[in-house]
Length: 366
Image 1 (cartoon, rainbow, N blue to C red):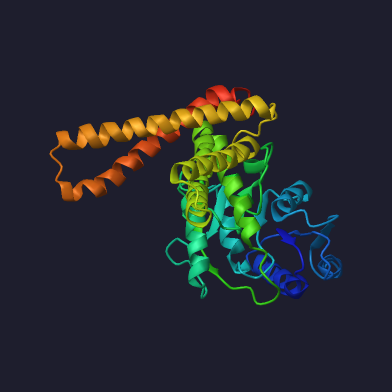
Image 2 (spheres, rainbow, N blue to C red):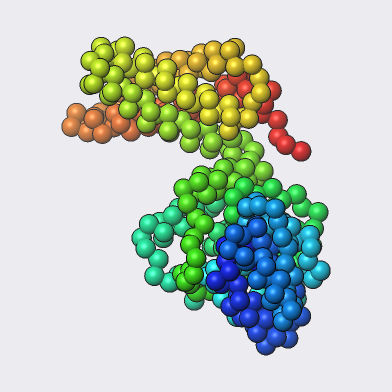
């Protein structure tokens, strides 16, 4: 049983007691590993004290190194054949552990997830924004797995599922990493749980962790579908660049009274520079010389802009009239045509930059 902790002194007694009671009631020999990130509130020292009464071992780490790495360290220290991970904030019901372990020991599953989104599962009084974030995160992972609750932090695995697997999670969703990379042979089961709200302490989830999750998901897409993962990063940055373009265009023209064509040119250069920087740092992780590479990126972007105009002209002045489109529908179809053109241009820009600008940086990791 692996429980990563940071400032969970107020919860640690109850979590240890309930895990011990649940395992004893299910006839399970349990080893509880509290992997503590040097909590200022004394969680680690309290875990040591609980070890005198319960089968608890405290692993003390030098600092706040993150939940996922704590789980990996716990795996390395654990002695059992079935490894269970759960949060320390009492959001996961320990009483479900025997059912999860039984599915693995019986050979019916190699990984079992405590799921909020299967029949019988649910959450306790979540506000709308938290439900939205959770659903959004789940949708992002849909191309990686059919598991209904891949975001769950409560799961059990047969040791063989993770043994010898290179786990390199970014952020706190180690379960998703194992779903994608683990040797479970598709034998993943979900059992319903009722996710409870934290009663003591504060949540570790914030904007930074959400950004790290996006980075993590993109890495997993690259692991499973290399070019799709690269393209999704490229397109995400391109979407942000489009917003920057509009903001700079409006600011230059409306606030500083710059002639609209000059304002559009400035907006294009600013947005494209932003896109280059983030694609260099994130999408392709390039270490090539900036000067020539930046020029290449601009050339591809200008070519993409010209292609956009050509496609728009072909669609609006040729395709739509050939289809006898009524004039009152033309404006709506103009926007639709631009969406099609932007998608095609994004594929062109991605391909050209992959094969030319960042050619040396598009090798798949071994």
